[in-house]
Image (cartoon, rainbow, N blue to C red):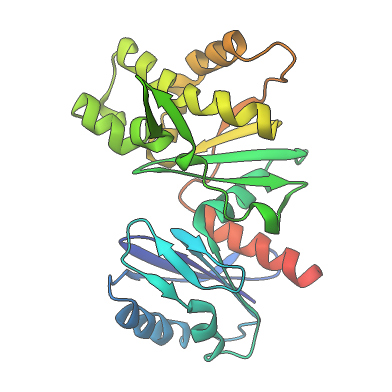
Amino acid sequence: MVTAIDIGATKTLIAQFDASMNPTHEIRFETNQDSLIFLNELKSHLLKFSHVSVIVAGVPGIVSHDGVILKCGNLPWKNFNLAAELSNIYDCPVFIENDASLAALSEVNLLKPIPVTGLYLTISTGIGGGIIVGGRLLDGLKQSEPGHILIKRDGLWSEWEDFASGSAIKKQFGKLARDIESDEDWQLITENIAEGLYALIPVLQPNVIIFGGGVGKYFDRFEHMLTEKLSKNLPEYISRPKLTEAKHPDEAVLYGCYYYAQHQIQV
């Protein structure tokens, strides 16, 4: 069975999937900021599972190709070799990947037909995302960080997430996205989101862009405005991607772990 681990900044969720992609058992616990304490807690919970054939974990940070967590945005973990530690528990393949990339894998594979290129964006505290080609997460794109693209505003360079993320919205308007009802405010939010897409779309040429995260949940409030801005401002020879919202934003990382395991086992 595939054992999936969604490691968040505050909570960690473990789920085991059967061959039909059905979760059969789940455990949730707080994510300790201390990596060693967290590791011991994770190990104790993993030992409660049986028939573990592959382990895939999603983490909110940058992961090396051999499963070392190099850095996390909201956790003080650096050079944490989680893959090696988990391999000591079970004699099975262990894979560690960025959580947004795994969420992207899940959400793109839920689309029928699966697009040639899909871009998933989670707009929350920051902006994360993943690029999926042919329904798969490619090695060369695993460490892509769309939220960190640089955009010049008022003569200064800023990262996209510095002015378009959920944190930036809270700072600018004094409230969370869910509490914003003014069309004028949503026009400003939408323009900030569009600025990053003006840079990403011509390069990636995604067939679809999927929005998740705390701001993405309110896709219906900015979908029409964003569609208009992209149609108006992108060069006419650039294909306009389909815009949609995440189907399972809260479980996307776990299901992405399942898809990733299936792809690795088939390779």
